[in-house]
Image (tube, rainbow, N blue to C red):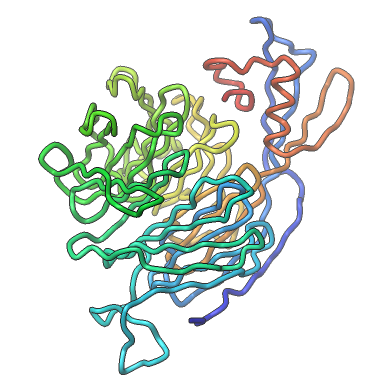
Length: 424
């Protein structure tokens, strides 16, 4: 059922770069000052989706970066062309209509259904795109789209009588998905059958609401979960139990992510130590590292945090106070705490907004606010200027990183803190 169509405004093109990263490359341990590269990320506004009627709760790009799904507090799920912002489909599920408002779908409690979380199934281009969504009323929704982005299937797989889901994530291969929410229970389901295959209960896990469940990006047998009890727990599907845990991060949104080798990112809704990196093999306080947000350490309060692809040496994070939408470097030093890029300072459409959702591809990133806006920015233009031969080349992020690898720049292991672009 169609309600409203978000308006599209301010579609931009590449403008002058907004910040510059300049550093010498290293090769064989020798600094090549005379062959330094100036790397410039041209972050520019692409478009804004305006939906003032309801709060944005989550935004997710499909794996191929072609589609953007946005969920709202009134139960609407909008699917857009990720690059143009054009609306492709609007979907909404419910079990009954309100007699007072026949045109509006309502839940059994006579309140708009809240779609709290989204996840696209990892898939090859030859398969249909699948989007799953969870409702705050315990409903699990399933949508299928064809290659052109048209909605072909829409159904409610089941409705929990006890749980209200807040988190949803697919395994890297797409064969399983995990959900968590109001109850301190982590549920794992089989994608093909739709049946629950495993359940991690409170007796060995969480004691409060779960706001993020995340499969390990390299090992689909490992799941991380976090929430209000300030514990992040690592579960092993093979063992059928928890295998490790850490204390500290207050997870209040989509704020867990992983990268190889053995690194876990946590975004905490706290005034200090809000962005941290952990060694997932030990979860030790001795090996954790806090990424400074800014010179004022009391302004973060993170809702969402993730590694940027394909470099994964940068973090996209958003929160509810000042400087709430930033790109941070995982190599950031505590003696010079400042974002690599501050979206709030450079985008008037985000200023004064409470940002609660974010996601990114290697070309664009999106931020969603409680005022109903989704602001999408370009991330794809890197200008690589060789000071040795004066050549100039503009590529996407992925092209730049692949070119750096082929050109001999070190890409293995942890690189020096000044090198932001060649780290895996």
